[in-house]
Image 1 (cartoon, rainbow, N blue to C red):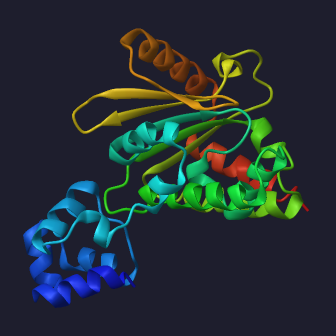
Image 2 (cartoon, helix red, strand yellow; image 1 turned 45 degrees about the vertical axis):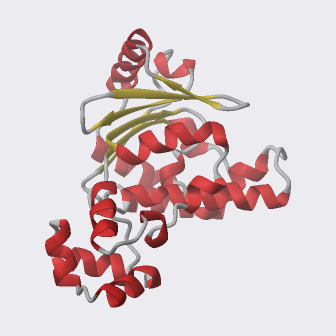
Image 3 (cartoon, rainbow, N blue to C red; image 1 turned 120 degrees about the horizontal axis):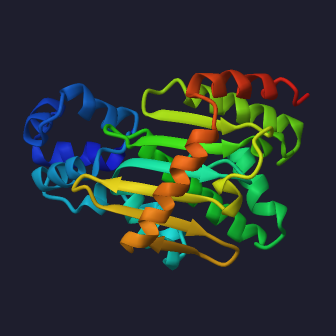
Length: 255
């Protein structure tokens, strides 16, 4: 239950039906915001907050923004507003699809964060996943190397749970996963992971990660290079449903 939304409705005399009319959504959608604590699309959050005479942050506090490092915030804004996200990962699964156990293992595996920082980063990562559960989620397509499925992050039980969760996520119409088999030789993915985001107004931005921090890319030449790399990794990968079957098979090997 979103208690802040419930209180705002009560204070203003709005019902789920009247708020839905103001925002331009179905009343059932507002009901999900209220009872399931679903996160509305940014423009719906703004319209609802205006109708309820509240700040957006009063009803949907952006906890992940406060927890994430400052350098990550520009990309977080881009990611939240994107209509499509294309991600390539060669080492670990994308953060948006990680289970809690898998994400914790990734964050603790290198021994780089104190325990308190691990929990803070973990909470931020899990909060970010809300963009795939919002009313109008972005089309999320990811290509991953087969090595990601074989690396024992967190141990067999964690990997089995993670890969089964990945298969379940693939049932969503806005999630597509493609696996590059180990039989593929040299390809563009060997140069490192990246993400490409497209916005409502057709702007394109990229994101590159490294050991210290991430880098947001917007230069047209850099974007063109990332798009070429995407076409290469996507071309080497299995189809979505071939990948789902493959992930399911690998999941059962983690015993």
